[in-house]
Amino acid sequence: KLLQEEITNYQSQIANLNSELASLQSQLTTAQSETSNIKNQYDQVQSKLTSQLTESTTQNDQLQHQITQLNTKLAAERQKAQEQVKTNLEKIKAEIQSEAQQERTAAVDEVRTKMNSEVANLRDALKVIKGEMGEKEMMVEKAWEDKIEGER
Image (cartoon, rainbow, N blue to C red; front, side):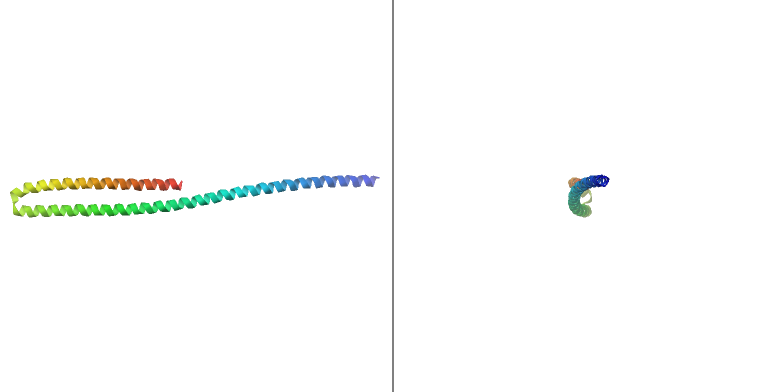
């Protein structure tokens, strides 16, 4: 009878241990499932961030290209304006010298009038060019701001 009670006691302890083992296995399965879900969520976030980084890099490259194009265009326009001013100044100088040799006294007043007119025209042309250049520089600044905003 004592042996029977001891066997029953051991069987009860084994049943308790089996029950605890089943509970721990259930908890482990739940934890593994939660870990898998968290990993899937992490992978989704990582994929989304990678996609956003790629898109941002593409936008950045496009903005850099636009800035380069605008800078090239601005440099060409500045060069063209400088050449035009130089050409116009050379024409004015040539006219002054030619007319001065032909009619010194009468030509001086006439040349001054023409020169003032040409200078005013050149100033107007320069104002227009500077206005256009200012617009282009604002476009460059806007592109830089968009680029910086895109990087954020």
